[in-house]
Image 1 (cartoon, rainbow, N blue to C red):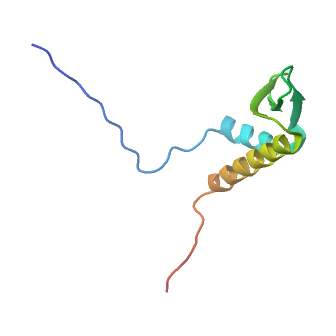
Image 2: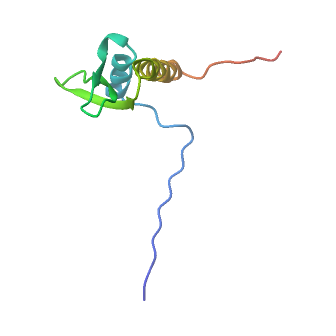
Length: 96
């Protein structure tokens, strides 16, 4: 006889990021922690410096310098938005 056990998880809200994750997002949201390097094939790679290790983490590859800069700016905006929502829900409208 074979039994099938299943396990389900439910969330009442989205899981909260850890303190380490929040520190990483704060680090990545600063442009001074980014750089653009040219690869042997001519593409440009965007990288951010890991906050604890002395290494660069590659993120995107683009064909042009403006495209690479735009990718960095979009990444920074993305992580700034994540940090904004860590503070809690944003009230959009209230009713009386």
